[in-house]
Length: 185
Image (cartoon, rainbow, N blue to C red; front, side, top):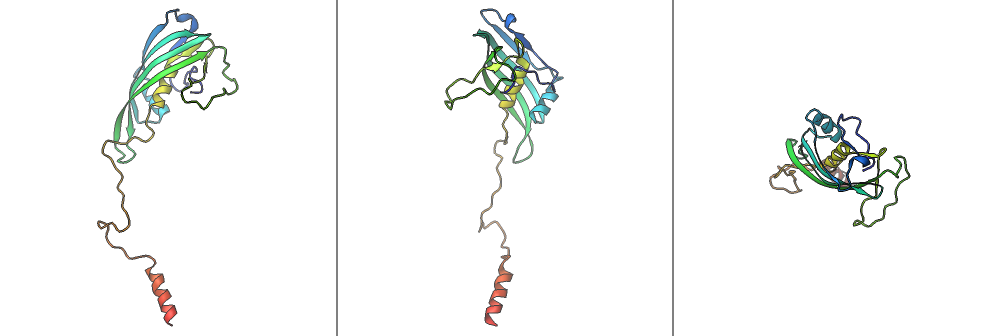
């Protein structure tokens, strides 16, 4: 996630939360994307439709910033890559991010180790706020299957010598006949 704290400009939906709005004990936030923004989210996500986007976040203080943990759930309509028919996919993505106001938006790249168990690096806050709607949209998009396939949909494959395939003349048979004709003459 490159700029999760920054709102998506193509979508007219924001839910900023500032450091000052989060009590010491933390705060639970539930977001439901309004129906009016779902088409814009579908366009951004390159899917046929987004029918639902809901996020449940627990926001707490971590160091000088905020930790956002929870789950993003959604329902998207895509096109099956095999049958080209519409396909409904349910999405459920876990979120666990830490945002820091001390990171500048244009900061140099953060070094990341190759350890897959290591937590993701901190994300920059925009000002002293995190746009939870932008986090929800980005995690919905991360959960979208890039190659959706309907249950039971399979590509038809044929192998050479398949008995169901009619016998076709070898396209090189003409060349073979010419070669034989030249060697005899």
